[in-house]
Image (cartoon, rainbow, N blue to C red; front, side):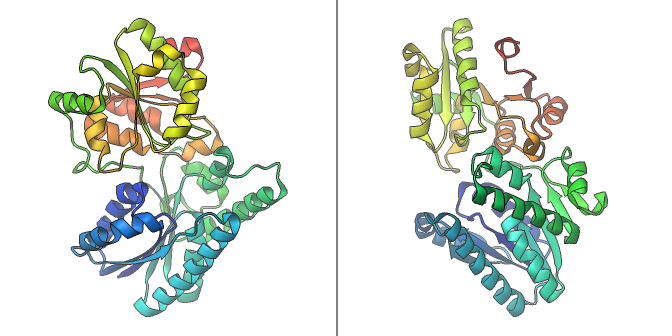
Amino acid sequence: MTVLYITYDGLLDPLGSSQILPYVKGISKHQDEVVIVSFEKSERFLYGKAGLLSDLQDYSIKWKPLPFTKGLGFIGKFWDLCRMYIMALTIARKHNIEVVHTRGHQSALVGLFIKHLTKAKFIFDFRGLWVDERVDKGGWDLNYFFHRLQYRFFKRAERKLLIQSDHVVVLTHKVVNEIIKLGATKKSNITVIPCCANYNHFRLSTETDKIDARISLGIPTDAFVLGYLGSIGKMYMLDKFFQLFVMATKNRANCHALLITPDTERLKQLMNRHLPQNLLQRVHIKSATHDQVPNLLPAMDVMVSFITSTYARMGASLTKMAECFAVGIPVVVNSGVGDVKQTIDRLDGGWIVDSLSEDGLME
């Protein structure tokens, strides 16, 4: 069987290398051929193309990368979508595609088009509640007419995609019933696949790994380290992380913070806003590639992730949590986000904070 896999994310993006590639490699072991359409950022493509092509030689995977259009807003996204349609149609005709597997809503629009045109089976990898996530993250401000227009278009499209898909993949058990309300026809046609970590990449750490990581980062080897991993954004409550850090320093004189993020400049602005000057020297910031993260995580004693609890968050699965579990780092997270409470309770993998008030954090 030949599968067409379409993603608007790049295989050379951190998310692509950590989540998409392992997933597609697994699919390819059970199919005759998988053809991937992805959108790659120019700099990453320039430096990463040869290595990825070499990596894919051992799999029945053909990669059809397209350049990601940067800096043109809606026009750029529309242009990319047009090229996605053209490339998918070309591949479907050339390779006799039997299944089209799409990651995310934009790709699913193309997948449904290919289904109607070729009678291929259509798998909609729904991910989270993306349309509402766009509002949560500040991508769409519903006070603006054009943003409201996009929101309404994709909400209508979402229902059509769910109704007409042959199978739906979601990230959490908590969102399954909501997906049925939104249009998915049968619970039996929905599969839950949470975000995972590659245990060959993220290995259980040792005391030596911890010491080496701290020395490389300039953190005292005997410190207690609160950690943060990932991007800085509207829904990631860094003010609460810093509040917890300040409280921890009052109980532990040797408490330090390590934040691994690509958004270093924005993080420094938040630090100056939420931290007293005397604690800034105890905060360590590191921008790291996906390949570097497994060597840095052991420096943490605990990873903290506070995320705004909204309607869309029921569909969220935290990759960073799986990566920390793989390395052996417990986590502190707030309730109301996907299946995190059930996962932590089942694995005894950390602590759930039900209230982000000062009293709740103290507990």
